[in-house]
Image (tube, rainbow, N blue to C red; front, top):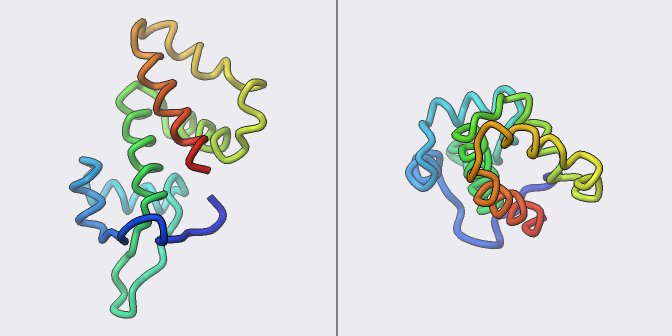
Length: 119
């Protein structure tokens, strides 16, 4: 996600983003610090303004973490989404993780596919 736009939906504050995704505000800030979530633009008053793309990305991160992916693995998955042409070559990452979680892969695959289509 090299550029941030808010034209595909209403801009969100950090509180609204937190409520919509169920991710704690401090966790959102942490994800920004470690590069999982890009730092958003700020309003004239200095408030973070999140786009619909960032909402989708954070939802993807949350679901990935719920399924047991580490932050480094999430970072790798996000890179795959951003470079979706490499998806087939690296598809084994998800399959290996789900060998221990039968039944979880289909819902994650749908989520992952929606992230790629949003790009």
